[in-house]
Amino acid sequence: MKTKKIAPSLLSADFSNIEKDIKMVEKGGADVLHLDVMDGHFVPNITFGPFVIKAIKRVATIPLDVHLMIENPGDYIAAFCDAGADYLTVHVEATPHLHRVLQQIRAKGVKAGVSLNPHTPLSTIEEVLGDLDMILIMAVNPGFGGQSFIPNTLDKLKRLQKMLKKHNAEHVEVEVDGGIKLENIREVSEAGCDIFVSGSGIFKADNPIEMIRKMKKVI
Image (cartoon, rainbow, N blue to C red; front, side, top):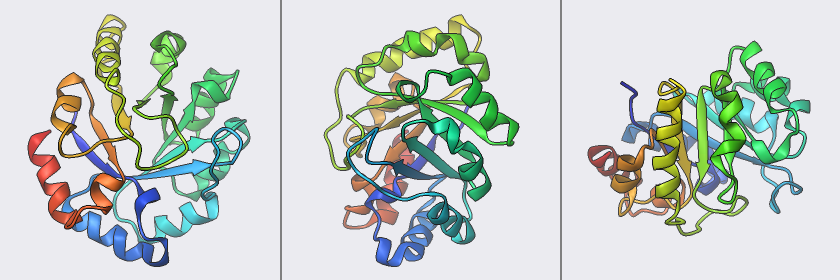
């Protein structure tokens, strides 16, 4: 049985004291750290690259879940794997050669993930289920933190579980990113999520450590 995991999104952390925030969420029981890499092309914002990932790897004691919101991700697989990614996720919308990119990730000994934007149908990944370790369902439009959860995501998660069962791929972890808060995390879990990405839901809480613990109790 898959273990449910809380993944604080460092996009909402205090980058002037990032090590402090990392240690804080680790103390709260966070299972992985979610890192959004944006290039200003695939999504409007620009965040950070491999050098920042490498610096975070030096201070983190839990796995790094690196989410590439970038065009031509195949050109950067080696750089992000070498920087310390434990999970590396690319968008199905960003590459015409998804199978090849997933093979590149796995060849580096890193868990391969694929992400789908809210409008992208599940059928786009059906042919590569055997090459995946994780599927990331976007519950908001990518590029900005603090957005509200798109309710239709719950139905999409339920349909994804049926697809995984049909193809004997139930071992693949399912992650949801966007608008995850204490108020909705239980229903997201019941719909089939395994890894819960939460940025403002954790870092903007009065007590982030206690928030993580509360979330873990209800998933």
